[in-house]
Length: 218
Image (cartoon, rainbow, N blue to C red; front, side, top):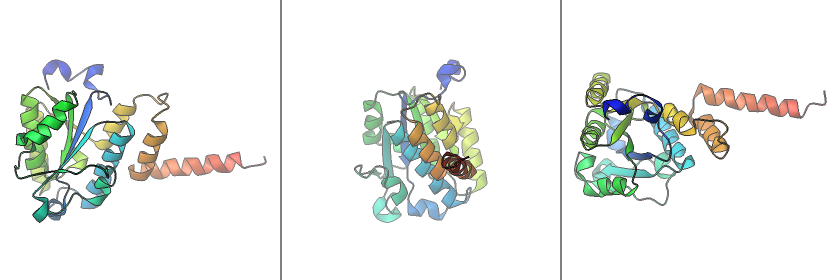
């Protein structure tokens, strides 16, 4: 991401400019995920995938050697049941022409990446794509590394290369941008309720209180 694109309103994400690539959320990678609690990453990447669907953001699924490393986790596949992940042999996703062609076919330049592991399968394509003119965002809490140090060093390296670190709820917030954007409010609220942790619990509580108030005779 060039310096002039790092600040100002245009630096924020919009659904119309975004394309999402989810990389290698597979059993083998989860088996050695130690930077985060694995179920948290499952929750976050599933929430991110559902948010992309709510906002009609093109999403590309990809795996590596799925015949040995396992299929994409079901929670993410279920969001896009019609899509077969691109199964690669290349470690660097951005060296697989099928993935690059799929991204370029969208005509979008704000590339959002999440994957396992951060230090390899996120860092390599993110750094390469940033060097090829894409504005790249790495969703750090929907990604993870083999250790906290590996993940943290990867994020530092990404920042040095001009990649913007971001979290999945921040992505959703930038896509929604305005609560007067009523078309996507129900979907965004549902994703937050399902995957937003304490915010989701509080939202469900608020709905309960509103329902009780609406049914009150007072």
